[in-house]
Length: 149
Image (tube, rainbow, N blue to C red; front, side, top):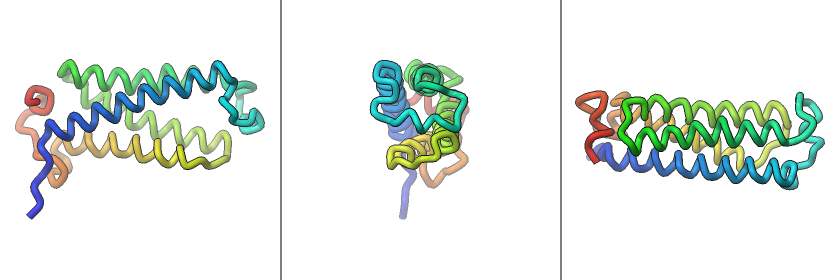
């Protein structure tokens, strides 16, 4: 018989994913800005509105990294907006990968990793909301996952 994972473990996994997402977006942004793409050929931007990796690097660091960091901070401080911010961060990651694939029209295994990352964040949010009780025990109140650690 399968038993759902306790909410505190699911919550910790979600925070860990968000911290990793924020840090890796920050590193990616620094590499994009400091090294103009960190070895990614500028020709990948030929079908885009960008002539360098400056704007994509800023978007990666501020928007993707920022939402990941904000979601992790909200969960760690037990803010009521934690799960909403986590969903925004997960969707943001998915949108980033879709947009990147559409713009550069090149595939990298890292895109698959970050797509799974964003999808996993959304799955954990769904579990904590009680929509997927097979994954995590349903919460009794909307703030239970944030108050029981």
